[in-house]
Image (cartoon, rainbow, N blue to C red; front, side, top):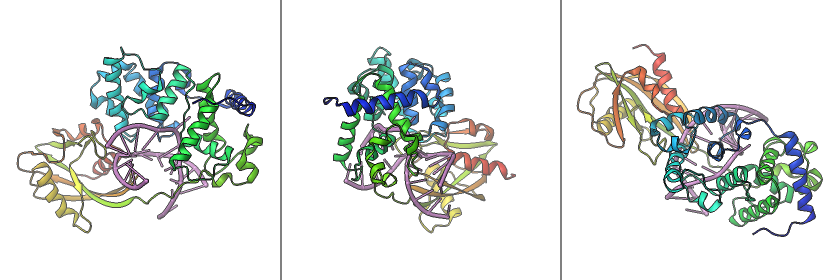
Length: 362
DNA sequence: AACCCGTGGGA
DNA sequence: TTCCCAAGGGT
């Protein structure tokens, strides 16, 4: 796959590596060569900003310092360490992959892209990142930063979602990474995209590649990369309730596979459009947890935006319920003290509902 | 191919 | 407010 390295490529590589040595930001995972720690950082950094990741990475490595610790941990503890980061399948896949590594690979992180990609949650990007950064393999990465840098540098003025364009970009990234310090070369491309060649602004005066850049020459860097507009998130409403019975609150575990899979939550349901929240709540509790509540007090609502949904969540409190708990659409349930609810791994949207409930007196 | 899957920050 | 999007992966 590697093509002959031209002098222009060598020059680009030299400039990137020299620039990166001087300008790279300080990040905790740049202080280690531990493949496990690097892998965790790459999983957390998927679609997530560096500043957000740092405290999560520190805590995660402290709780689960190696593959075996992660593989044998309680899944609730893993999700608890992930709570608030989003895209929770990443955490479940991370532990699933750790089990495979622990059982089938002698606890050693694979050092080749093909084996890495066979693991759950590791795609082409993450495999290339781990192979190059942790194992000095000349494997390319292509993330949002690299796409932006390369489309501008090379003047690629086609929709970057097109498979042919994606393959071209992988090929270009592969050409650039052939040579010494592949991990630094890849990180230099990403760092340049994150700090200089940014989406809504360019800082071309500080760019080590400015005199090679096609978009700078043409003057259309801000229009690249070309991509389709994103669809608006659909508006949805839902209801949720803190149900108290004999001093205990009902919590339910959301099914793996869907939204916020594996996380604990207060029972509730999505609302049919135009439905009355209070009536829908009574119905939902009956159907989904088998309980009959006599009265539900609405304490307010919270707004929350997911990638493809804009949610208005109506929050209720129910003092008293009768019937035997029977679940439909939830994986399990517990009756626990109200104070203990927030200790279970839960999503940001659930935290908003809990905060609202805590603000309102009984 | 198109959709699903979180969250928070910045312009 | 609205929009974009940030070191993507799975189906």
